[in-house]
Length: 640
Image 1 (cartoon, one colour):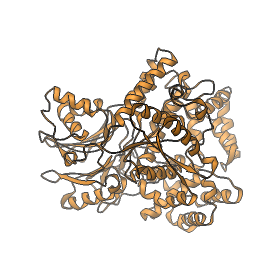
Image 2 (spheres, rainbow, N blue to C red):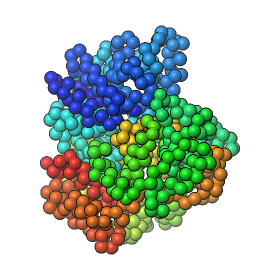
Image 3 (cartoon, rainbow, N blue to C red):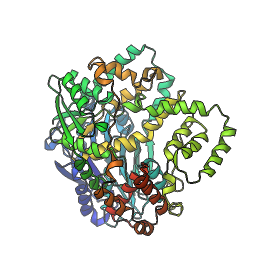
Image 4 (tube, rainbow, N blue to C red):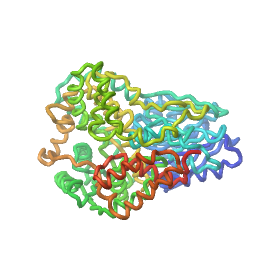
């Protein structure tokens, strides 16, 4: 796990700026720093290193290829690099390697096979910058599911930049890119900014499964797809697994073990997060079955029993025989993280589980450098209750013809023009054209009303995404897959999972220089999961059936069949306490909001007063506070 950065056409100030970019992502790689510049200084690559495989200087980056044509700066891990290494030697593409790093193997694979074949070949998590000296071409690539971040774009008239951390870009000399006000409605709808957009004009996130090519004079780029989650889902559902549920579980277990075995490889200590949930318990169970030594497992607990899973996780760890560490955090511990959050993400982000995720990462880093997690299980194996509940609501709603529902929905919306409460939600859902549309409408909440209408506009004419900011969910074709729940899962994997969940895990873990790995997101596991019939994932009220079939071989059923508490914190209680209430109300001070000119002051304070005076908690309150904290952290004044 590392951080990468780069500049094109930066002129005489290139060295000062690349050093500044590297320094801003020190937390992503505290072990070493590297810089490479082309002979004419038009292309500059920067790297911060967190040493995981090959701790010697032979693994240092940026790294030049054996034939001196290519140079790479890369963040992540290639789990099948040893297989590729053997192939390169067998085919005599490389006679000998300088070291044992996956970076060198990846670089020589690009040199031998080219971008498309190499990207199709590798399995791992990554953000890659590869410069071809001969063609004067820079390639940027991101992993298939979006585990590693990669921002890119233009600063000024023709200065192309990229980085793992958005803060590295904003640290550049004369960075004046304005706030991309067109993304604000989506932020207040979801609590994060969906790719390809960022909070800044002309700065974007490279989407999962894509690569970007930009050639000299580095003023125009092309983006191509080498792997698609959507295509994998469609193909899988057209080629369903033909065996029994038991045979499917056996095959999934084999694939997961293969993934976990590869992800346990490191030259530093490795452990795993363990909650009391199905996903992390499955990962830890399989890790322990593959290891001759005790696996290190880590859990945080909370004194509030409504949110505490530490006792249950401890019982699972004891049964598996792991070397288990748990830390009970106090409210003061969790509250103390809040002021640090805005600096971790670089742009507004408001999934409140960012707080416990940071705390468990901080505790884990005291013992290991790499930690495996169980993320991906809910989205791949139909674990969210939302999926089945929306199907039930849709089946009832769809009994009424759309021609009748649409005007009734509009009428109810007019009657309830304030847009508050259960009636507003029913009105929105009643007007749904499909279950996919219903899923989108269920997410709206108070989001659209928070942003001032005048603060969103057409954007600059140089912006290739100028105009509206539809998300991949907004453009998802209804009925793409036969099963409604499969469509909801795919929608989440296309946006919510990479832009919220994986974003959260990467930023909070890297804030303490901890590498996280996600075995369930291995390409072979993902592609196999999409071949499963829905009944193998969810049936008779039992979610993640196939994972349970695997897990119950290692952990007694009675240890797992408990109510799920999730990885949450009682924000609705804490924000009423004097210290945090004062902090919150200073952020949403009416004079501050009016001066910024971005948010609707009346709506913000209606939501806040409903919460303080009536106890009505809405998640948009946290979205607002995290946005305002970001504005304060960056010194933004609002409308320019």
